Amino acid sequence: MPDPKYPVLSATGQPTSFAEATAVRQIDSHTYSAFFQDDWSVGNVPHGGLVTSAFLQATSKHFATTLRAQGQPHTIIAHLDFFRRTQTGPAKLVVKDLKLGRQTSVIHITLIQNDQEEVTGTLTNSNINAESGLSLDTEYSLHPPPVPVDLSKLRGDTDPNWELLDTIARPGFRKVFTKATTWLPRQGQHHHSLADEWIAFSNGERFTNESLGFVCDIWPLPIEAYRPQNAHRTKGGKPSKTPLDSNGTPYWYPTLALNLDIKKTLPAEGVEFLFVRVRTKKVLNGRFDLEVVITDEEGDVVALSHQVSLILGMQRNIAGRAERGKL
Image (cartoon, rainbow, N blue to C red; front, side, top):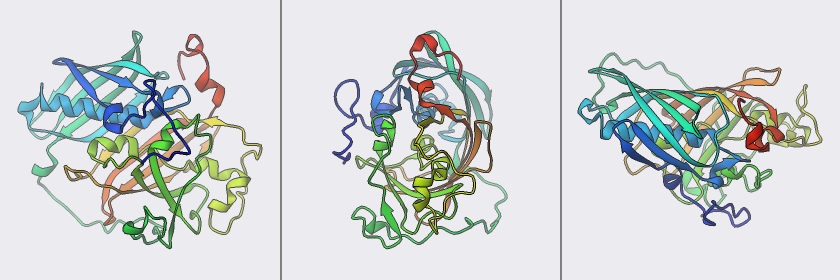
């Protein structure tokens, strides 16, 4: 259930579920509507992972209706570009069929609010369960390896290696982070630039493939680990050699581009937990990269994501809409 310490509500005065927050309605064969809730936002801006999942939901509906004859229900690739800040409230998603093929099909989606194009996405669908072809065991594994976990002990916070993250910084601003329950390594992360987590929905919902847009964008930001007051979250507890300011200047990290590569289908009923590793390789001039690996409880790769984001002052997020325009 949602943590009573952080009673974040939607505009209706009630918390909304992930299913409600990402629901899309078909208007015609190539147009869909969505409604972004305030309780799934960062400041005044709907969370980028939520928007990505709305794109996945629209794609799923499009291939279940207009493109049903293709028999390609699974999104395997998504690329999104975020041109402008989205906002809470209604949104329209307009679809263009780019390429309809026997093995894969590609569509383009434009998200429009107040007559402005704010996000575009190119998504590729296939039928993962019917795929065939060369397969090789690459012997890939995460390095350094994550510490072992007993998933049955996470909810009770009794796992010897993982601890519940029970304090959310600025929950009134980072509202969307109240929607996920997160466990971090008790002995700290391997490095300031890397973060491991186990994640679950706070309200007991389960992760499906359409949830992966949200999962790939909800994690402890490695950049925040560079603040001296967060040094204890890294093994050895040593501050970074290039520490971020210690006065707690709040930042907003809007996404410029997000790529998602989905490797497998999750069960139709969903899964309770997923593992996420996020790593940044370079932070320079207010721009940084993120590499995200999502695995299931067996350690099998579910999805990969690469993202490019900006580091902006919080005021850029909460500025009035007359001042908004481009990121």
